[in-house]
Image (cartoon, rainbow, N blue to C red):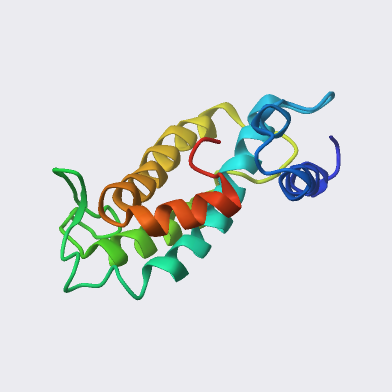
Length: 157
């Protein structure tokens, strides 16, 4: 797809049409650069995870979740000069802010129709950190995670 917004619009249309049709959603469209398709998926997951934050906020507080954990794994927040422990909700917000900043950075992604080779390294880092948000919700807020996934089915994409 050659338009700056065509890939994202196509992806969002597929999700609206049937969020459970994962095969259609992840299938790289004809004439679409696979790296750009993956990029748009990461951007879309960031958008959708904001909905999870809204669901989590009443229950996932600095008191109830003083550390970012998934099962027994403890994650340090990379949003600080030196990685440090944050409450889970702060970690989640910091991670989404950082991922959004990276994915919208003109330095790393000057165009949305092609991805430069050096910028691909950010995909793995962003995906790994976003996964931690899903993992925390799964292990510590299962009902909220399931409520979110019924609507978005984002964790498996």
